[in-house]
Each structure stands twice: as C-alpha cells, then as structure tokens.
Image 1: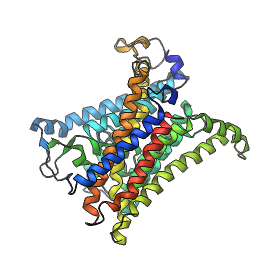
Image 2: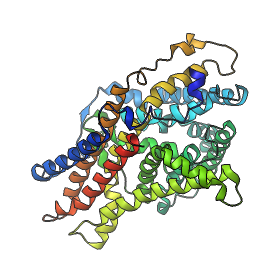
Image 3: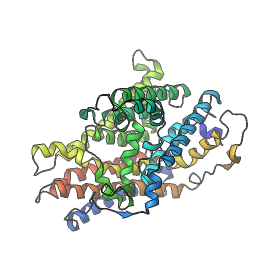
Image 4: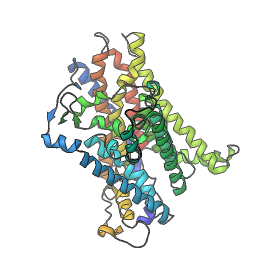
Length: 456
C-alpha cells in the first residue's frame, strides 16, 4: 500500500463532497451560522477587552524553565535535529531515486505540517532545532570568541517579515505550482537555494536574519502564538495560560499581513487546484502559454492561480481592516497589522483540516522509509511498512467531522480574537459597526474554505 500512496504524496484529502457524512450545504450553513452567532454573542456580551498579553499565566516549576534554558538540552535538541537532517540527506542522495525515497515525505509532511503540530503545543521550536542556525553557530563560534562585537550591518526595520513571506511563497510554489513538486531534484535545488540564502543573509545582517527571513522559523513563530506555553517576560519563567492572551503578542512589522496571506491563500489554493474543473482548465490551456511547453505552461497557470488566492486574502483582509470607522488615518493604516493575529487560528484550523490525514498517515510512511534510507531492506527500530495504520482513511466520518470542526473552530476563535482586539483600537460608539466589514470577510472565508475543502 505504501507504493500506491507514494504516487499520491501530494494528495491531501480523502475525497470530495460526496464522501461527506452530511450534505455539503449543511456544513456551509452550519459554519456560517456558528460564525454569525459567535459575533452576535460577543458583540452584545463582550464589551471590554479580556485578552491581555501582560497576564502572568500559571508558572510551571522552576526546573521546567531551567530545562528549557539549559545549554545542554538546547544543544542536544539541535544536534538531534542536525543529525536527522543529515540522515534525510543521505536518503535523498544515496537512497532509491523514486517513489520510495524519504525526502518528499520528510520535506512536505514531517517538516511543513509537523512543525505546526509541535509549535502550537510547545512554542517556536524551530529557533532551537533549525539546522541552518546550528551550522551558523558552529561556523561563527570561533569568530565570536575572537572579536568584541558584531560588525555586521543591522537588519533594516523596513524589511520586516517580507523575506520570510517570500520564502514561504517559494515553498508553497514548489509544492503547489512547480512543474513536478515530487521531483527529488527540484526539492534538492530548493533546499540548496534556501541554505545559500540563509547563510548569505546571516553573513550580512547577523543571526536576526533567521528570525525574519527563514520561512520555517517565521512559520513556527507565527503559529506558536496559539501555544498554551510561553515565557513570562517579567520573570523569565515558563508559564501556561490562555493561548488567546498570547495571540496578540504577534509583533506588527512590515510583511506581517503578507505572511498570513501566503499561509491562508496557499492552503485554499491547494484545495482549489485539486478540483476537476481547475485541472481540466490547466490541461486545456497549458500548451497555449508561449515558450515554456506543456509542463511549463501548466506551472505558469498554477502560479497565477496561487498568486490570485494569496492576493485575494491579503487585499480583502487589508480592505476590511481599513474599513473600520471612527479611527484616524494613521490608525487606519496600522489596523491590518494590528488585527493580523486573528488570522492565526484560521490558518491553524485550515492546516489541520487540510493536512491531518496527510500528517498522520503519510508521516508514518515517511518514518518507515527513513528506517531504510538506502532501500536495502533494513528495518531499523523494527519498523516495517506493515506497521503503518491508516486509521483516519478507514474512518471517513470521523475524519470529516474533525475537518469541519477545525475549520469552524478556527474561524470562531478568529472572530473572538478580532473582536477583543477591536475593543482596544476602535473608539466607543464604533466598536460594533466598525467590525461589520471584517465580519463579512470572515463569513466569506468560512464559506469559501468549507466549499473548497469539501465541495470541489
């Protein structure tokens, strides 16, 4: 069965609307009503802000903070991640050069999807385990010991998260719009370009470059705003608390909305690109694109589609935020960035709805392949293809229920977060009417997301 599923490594769903345990119209109407009722309830009963990033949270035992901050623990985690990267590299170069290679699964499943699952629980883990950060620290350790300060240029504030947004777009383009997303050569070239860009940027701007430009670190830090675990800035202790108190701590920098637009727009396009209508459109018109051939023409059309989805999310969200009444021109300009964090629950909800079975089942397959990286019949740790459990695919009703719940819950939490933030930034008298444009956009996102996920 692994060989069959390997051929569809980029297929994320288990079917269309005909597989839904309830009619698609019910899912759409139910999702929209859940959103409207939530908005009505919080609009009437929620008159003052309740989410405060300054809340101390419940401090965990001191040894937890000590373990998190321990250079030994951090060093071990970084070393394990680096060793795992080398292991995947060995499999990519010297392993089977076909469907049985572990690289696509490690790249698209364990890294891209698994990173979200871990980050929403423990926080921005990529800062600790990033292989490029680890190698950079090793390369510059002697230099730091020999010099009193860092002579590199400071990172320009105007760059913000724009390099990270471009890196994220490069990743989703490879997966969703490139001529052959499963190509080992294409993935290797992408990883090489990524490493060169990271080390070149760090050589110019220092380690802050990783925090702003590494797409995986920006991704991890963004979704980690929903993590229940965080650090109390006043005491330095690791605490546990309401994730919605942590959510507004997302910094407002140039490119913040672009990051959210890429993450949300690309996930929506992933569903749309698998629809029969879009695939037929690409097949019919790919040859008409000049100079690039059929394969390149299809890639161009998919790239245009991906750009359209990302731009629609970015423009619609920005327009809705700026449509708020009762604020000054300067406040209006700042609102998209100040409200961008309310998209994080929606992004996380879509990621889990869209890729849950992909992570659980393709993830198992990838781990089994990594137990035999060279394709020589090894069974390291006793792992075998027969150990893969396709529980979710065998229980479609449960899977669809989880998918619908993730989408609707993500939007409901997003509406609550947006309302709470609006109470802080919108003057009294405009706090309800000023949110109507954002509410309409949220309803549109809900309808579109559920339809794309289940209806095409």
